[in-house]
Amino acid sequence: MSPALALLWVLVGIGLLVIMNVKYKVHNIFALLIAGLFVAIMEGVPFDKIVSMVQQGLGGIMGHLALIIIFGAIIGKFMTESGASQQIADTVIRHCGTRFLAVGLMFIGVIFGIAMFYEVAFLIAMPLVLNIASKANIPWMKLVIPTVVGATMGHSLFPPQPGPVALVSAFQADIVQVYLYGVLVIIPALFCAGILLPAFLPGIRDMKLNAMIKPQEEKPAHQLPSFAISISIPLIPALLMIASSLIHSLLGAESSVAKFFEFLGSAEISMLLATGAAIWLLGIRRGMNAGQVNGFVSDSVAKIANVLFVISAGGILKQVIIDSGVGDHIVTVMSHVNLSPFIIAWLITAIIRILTGQGAVAAITSAGIVSPMVGAFNLNPALMCLAVACGSNTITLMYDGGFLLFKETFGISMRDTFKTWGLLELINSVVGLMMVLLLSLFIS
Image 1 (tube, rainbow, N blue to C red):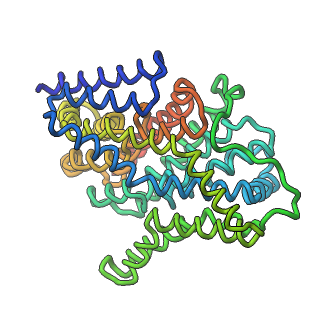
Image 2 (cartoon, helix red, strand yellow):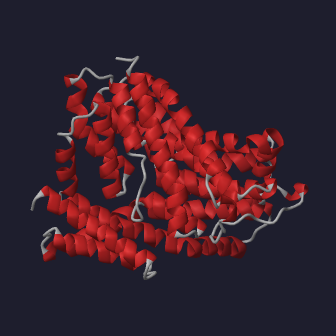
Image 3 (cartoon, rainbow, N blue to C red):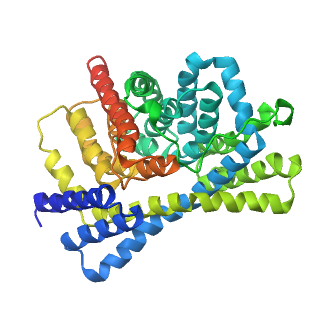
């Protein structure tokens, strides 16, 4: 099959998905499955391979995210019900004031994005943001956007996240330069997507929150857990992941200590430990009995079941696109475009990200394609890392895990998801690329 025809069937499948979602209101799980089956058949995937492809796509996402999403929901439940979120909200408002709340939350998002897996950062941060928005009497989306902007940029650009780490290795980049130039790239992107976008986005004040995560009623100050306990629980995964990365670098991958901390710093285990701390410190120690704890856990899992299955269903179409080789066709075509190598790298990565819905997959795949450009054009490896990283953090479609997580968590429409999540990702990515191009004029 020709590259043009292979791409055409993917575009038709995406169009079918949009029509089912927008016009006929087909549930996302069924729409994603039908679109994935359609693309697989039209791409010529043998019928005896399609079912296993569906299972692999669904199971790959489910296996990677199920426990993370469940633990994140449980932590959020205990933090909001115990008043820990309110304690953090009160402290942030007291020190930042309403004028600088968005800036403060944006840089908190960056820290969480660097330190945690994106889904972990999102699910832990959002109850806090909604409580702060309620407390400060600010439209909730005006604070959600800067927080998400910070988390997505931090996660996409900086090690120890898997995408940036793979890019540093592929391009043999100086990690210090990646951090240094990354700061110069991220600041304008944060300002444009996190401050300017919510300031001028029409209809942002009227968006209704129809989600599992809602601000809680205020508790009296004397009933709240301490700020130290409240902030330490969501930081447990971050601290364990950072410790694992540092020990891995200092002692080497084969060290028994490094292997132990790699175990503790994995997403699932670090989140399990944080969940245990939340149940103990915010539940049992504050007077909850076993029945109440189990009730909170069951309620948390029930409310995120739809989110979990919709996100997992997005893996079906992603797997079809990867296994059918459509991504390879796209990068072959883009490699012959007469543009700056940084723009070519960004375009290739962005297209793979849009087609597969996976930022890390897009970055790693693109790195294998564009890495020869570094030597051929005498490019700075750190800048190429950042160009590809920005491409992996671009606008996404309705089968992308981040898109679905954003939409389903807040219960907003497809249109509002594109207007908020879609725009903030696109602005992040484009402004980041522009900064890389600007830096390339001065850095060789």
